[in-house]
Length: 132
Image 1 (cartoon, rainbow, N blue to C red):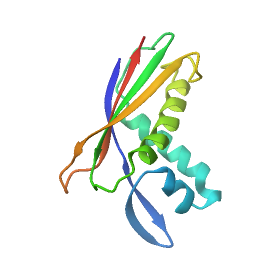
Image 2: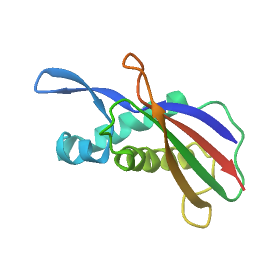
Image 3: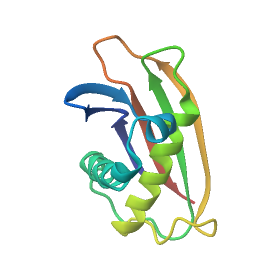
Image 4: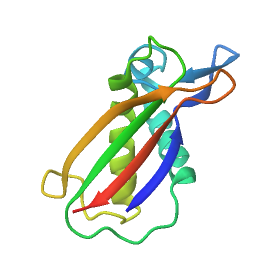
């Protein structure tokens, strides 16, 4: 089993300005230039790898549980988890932690809202990858 936290705020530069943004599906669609999306995907992939603990390979089927620790009450958890889910599954396959991320192997994902974090803390998602 893997159990780790992934921050869901990253620093972005646009038109010479730097800002910390919450990662979400909406961000990808509205903030990131279509020509820069591949670069974003690569950067986010590396970002996830930095937070993954050392682990053994998970053989066969697995499921993932997400717990979202948010900063703002109007945060859209589904938008945040959807981006993390896609990137995390691809990363797990690439690092050969899981065999594949199709329905034969990844038999489910679930997420829940955990609690609001303090202003000075980063929003993050606790992730559990469980072999079944």
